[in-house]
Amino acid sequence: MPNQSGSLYGLTILSPIIDDESATPSHDLQIREYLANLPTDCKGPFALAPYTHLTRLAVMDDVIYVGMPSSEEHLKFKYLIWEANFDGDLDRYLVALAKTVPDQINAIWSHCVGYPGTANLDKFLTYMKSCQLETTFYFAAVNDKSLTQTLTALQTQRAVADFIAKHRGTPAPELQREFLKFSARLKAMPTPLPAAVSHPRGIKTGGRNE
Image 1: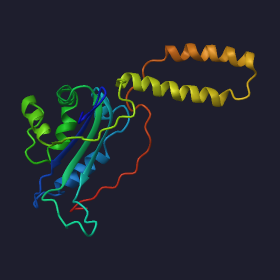
Image 2: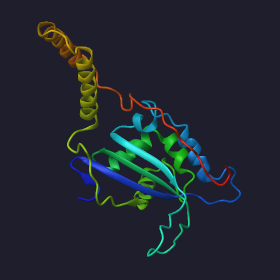
Image 3: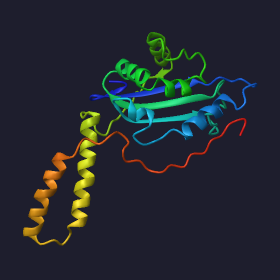
Image 4: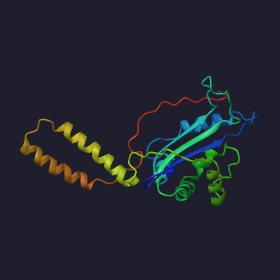
């Protein structure tokens, strides 16, 4: 089914960015700068809001001409591209974002043509759906597990890998005792927060005014 793989939904949205020559910095550059400074750990907006497995935002300046036999074409606007994988229903997810992190969502999409804000949920949903592209070949690596289940599995994977590395060469009787202790600790561990383990990223901004 388009947009869905098992219990996961694959969302693709392209929102045209306001082209205003009098805006300084330009609207696309303001989006880039805001995104570049968003936290990517558990304090990030898509980690604070529920259901998100992964998400990515980027600014598309134009399409690339790859040569013959294609025709050279250009976009009328620059576009904000948003891709997200999340649990369940589209309306539920968008409403959760609008209610949980409205300031961050508005700070990003306020630079896009026709964006109504999050205060009126019906208008917000209508706008987002009007910018949605059908995800026709959506594939989710784990399509039948919730975000909580996936986070717990990743936590277990890391913990087991660390245990193996730490106890390589340990005699069998001692290894068995240590594994029983490890298993008890693992079962008692709380579910990790989304994006609790993040990696440094290098982000370059660009735009008319940079």
